[in-house]
Image 1 (spheres, rainbow, N blue to C red):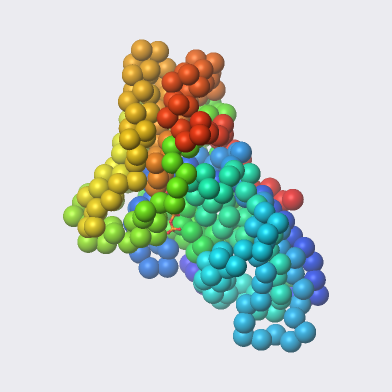
Image 2: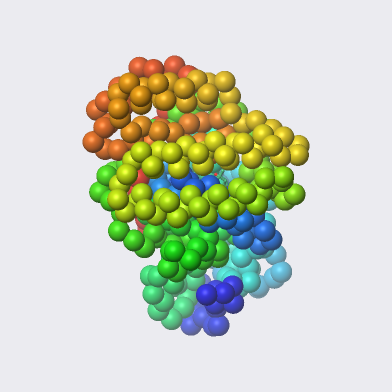
Amino acid sequence: MSEKDFIPVSYITLKEKGVVGYSSPSNIALIKYWGKRENQIPANPSISFTLAACMTKTSVEYQKKAQKNDEFSFELFFEGEAKEEFKPKIKTFLKRIEVYLPFLKDYHLVIRTSNTFPHSSGIASSASGMSALALCFMEMERSFSAPITDEFFNRKVSFLARLGSGSACRSIEGPLVQWGETASVKGSSNLFGIKYPYKVHKVFNNFHDTILLVDKGEKQVSSTVGHELMHGHPFASQRFDQAHDHLEKLGLVLADGNLKDFISIVESEALTLHAMMMTSNPYFILMKPNTLSIINEIWKFREESKTHVCFTLDAGANVHVLYPENEKDIVFPFIKEKLISFCQNGQYICDRIGLGAKKL
Ligand code: DP6
């Protein structure tokens, strides 16, 4: 498929008014997206677990303007309060997607959004937030159009969400989503995420992700700037090759359930992501001392307990602690006893692998 396939040919009718709503989850990448080309095309393929508890709920109320004009007209409420400071990001998103949703300037939109996780938790809300909004807009388009398949709906939502934030394109479905073209995964694309199409071993059912909130402050360097710094990065091409290699190997692991290999791929990905930050120009560090303390405690406990607990990181100091369902009775007490003390105000979120967005 190409970009052109997402430009609608015609609508049957543009409704006078209506309301649509979706909840959409966050996701945690196992193979990381870090580096992109123009128009949000990833420099390497990535794959993520869709989460279940960390979600954004969004509704869009739409009312046809008396006269279509050349302006986007919208109000934005976050957790019940008008949020002027969030509007520029939404406006940029609307501009990027307008060619694919040409009805947007026909309407006045009232967007109401809230997260199930605290806004200042350091958990990126862009994946869940942008995907929830893309779902609402696509639901509007669906009601204006001749019938479309669920597959096309999901692809176009993912395509639109990607234009808001790359990782958002992996939040529509679950439990595993790949974004980025690879020869070994049929149907994979740089334009949208697809549900991982092969059988996944049962050890990954109900996999846990306990998110340790190490630092809830504003990040010194945003993901967008971080991606930018991969241009001209001395290790960029090796890193992109490594991501392809890791993805091939992860494919085998997902099929055979070898958790030892899973751990070595996932932890290497997390540390490589941060190594890229530490070796860019300018360089920066998003981990905090407590991030490293947690990693060391996990390694020590894993050795002693012979369990398969491991960690991954996103672009921040928080640690995602991953473990299988059948080890939760050993691992969770360890987390509570040894790791929570490294969290800011003792805060953490119990999440697990999820199945994707839901209509409200
Ligand atoms: C480290 O999707 O937040 O979480 O496309 O600029 O919005 P933009 O970036 P974003 O980057 C996420 C980076 C990551 C890795 C990942 O989720 O794959």
